[in-house]
Image (cartoon, rainbow, N blue to C red):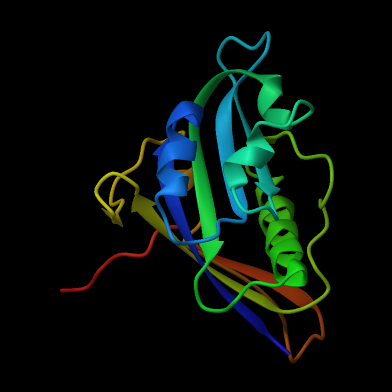
Length: 176
């Protein structure tokens, strides 16, 4: 059975902006994307994709042993929620696994787990919302994780070959 998830990402935040904005929302955020320079790295941008199953995602980022502490300079933080269903623990784990296993080939990902794609058909649709304007982000910087992550990621079983195949659509465009 295929799983379909629509993810709405809000950002780009600086870590100090996140908590106040998150508290003002009536949504539970359970996924996040971080990009920035790792300690002792002058130019290379690194990324981290994670999940949080707490009342406030920003509490997870404040953990003493969190990967956010591996960054000396954070470019941006995006926080996400699954909007087409009430997300279970399994849903959040599956989406995180799909995102990290896809993104590990795309950039300097700090995640050390989830490097293999899931064993089931998954359809992910990503929406990017600017948190200040509460409107869709039409243009993002080239190094933004929101620009690097495809708007659509499909991983499904091919009925003819009985093998899983990965399909992506980088940026969806509106038709007139």
